[in-house]
Amino acid sequence: MQLDGKIALVTGGSRGIGRACVVELAKRGAAVTLVYRGNREAAESLVTELTAGGHAVEAVQADVRDGQLAQQIVDRIVEKHNRIDILVNSAGIVSDGLLGAMTTEQWTSVIETNLSGTYHYCRAVAQQMMYQRSGSIVNLSSTAAEYASRGQVNYAASKGGINGLTRGMAKEFAPRKVRVNAVAPGMIETDMSEAIRNLAGEQILKAIPMKRIGKPEEVAAVVAFLAGDEAGYVTGQILLVDGGLSLGVY
Image (cartoon, rainbow, N blue to C red; front, side, top):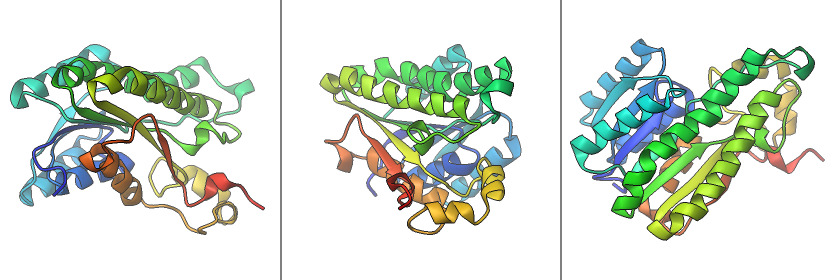
């Protein structure tokens, strides 16, 4: 398998796209540590399922907004395995509302979780990956970064920030053979997108050329590709996985 012997860390790994990434990386041979914030039952269930199948997976509870804890988690992984090869930043939240009615808490919680959380873990792995002169970071962005919806200015700003962070880091880290990319999903079948999918109904399918909602596993497959050596000449890219949604409606 293409990720045999790789050491991976996935934030937001107990649900949705993050969960699918944990499964995909583990099945491709990586030893995976998943970070989850509150859903202990889901995290432990996933660990039990994958370890029963012979995969090396463990879970750690942490809020990605805590940068000091992010560094501690990475340090423990490096102490155990002497390296860290893959970081997938998937932790994210939504807190929708029109800007005129949006509270400071709605803005801050989304920015600090989605953007600052990504920064904390990127910064935590940076020194080790540059020291070992290898590594792949994959950040979860969104089509919302370029094609924002009404009521999601905070979410769009956080994902736009991730795109800028990804490209800037890719330039900084490339001389040390560390690659940084992002995957930008469109409408994917997750708990987080359920409200907007229910609100949009059949209208959302009219905007997607492929006429269906994507699956978390389809995003995870792209993440795993970027994480592996097969993508060894790919860095600084934002790959859209959106069924053609970003092409527009004609």
